[in-house]
Amino acid sequence: MFSLPGCKGECRYVIPATLGEVSRATEAVRTVIAPRLTPEECYAIEIGISEVLTNIVKHGYSDREGCSITMCLCTNERELLVEVQDTGKSIPPAILARSVDEVLNFDLQNLTTLPESGLGLALARLAFDELTYQSNNGVNSLRLQKRLRAP
Amino acid sequence: MSRQTAQAMQNWYYGKNKDLQMNLIGVTHVGEIVVIEPMVKRLDASAAPAFRLAVLDLIAAGDSRLVFDLTGVDFIDSSGLGSMVSILKALSGRGGIAICNASAAVLSLFRLTRMDKVFSIVPGRDEAVAKVTA
Image (tube, rainbow over all chains, first blue to last red; front, side, top):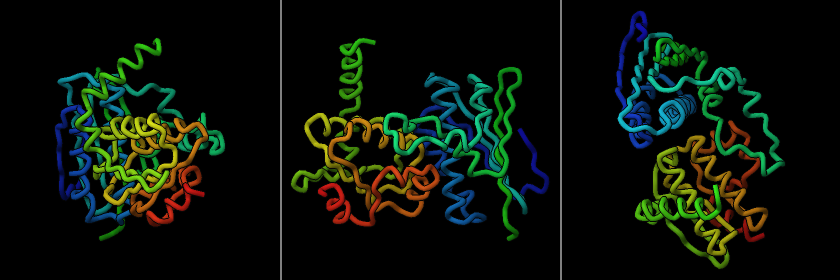
């Protein structure tokens, strides 16, 4: 996983890939990230992480039992980095390529086409400044970067 | 999938999760209005499906004017939001939904996704009840 120069604090989680454990892990992230972010940013990041982890459980591992997700959070003076790794099915390129506007530009007046799912990656992109994804040799790595204000 | 199979799966899911569903929402009737309080702090992917089913049961029983009182909810993600959209669709234009007592954090998701233009969101329970009564 990544190594962040001048890392002031690192938290590494190995999360059993179940929705219950994802919920617990995401809630635990809140205490790690809160000191350097506004409440709004903190909440947005919590949502982004929840969405990413949930997608891995539901789509990457298709709710298979016995799988796990590795998540590393690291902060230095200038940024928060989150890296999430899994060994499930990778995110389809077509999904990865969809812009936030494409995903969120649904017709508010049309009840039947209001989205019940599929917003997760867009919400993660909105919470972070950069999102990069790699899939190599069966390992998927999603890196999320948030620039921080000076302390 | 046939309707019978889908119903059988739903019955299995309901039976398997009946205890969870029964504990998942608090239900109060105010005349024809049903006020639903999620009893979970986090309406995320781990809780949203059971929440959705619990509310769909109320709709199937005849309730159509719903208030979601989110007093106890401090986190909602797209799964929780999606469950509310699904419930709205299930009403098929009957009755309505109003949401109240949403924290600033919870409201932020509705605004981010523009779902604050889809759902009626008001400060308190009395306003929400009035909203769906009208």
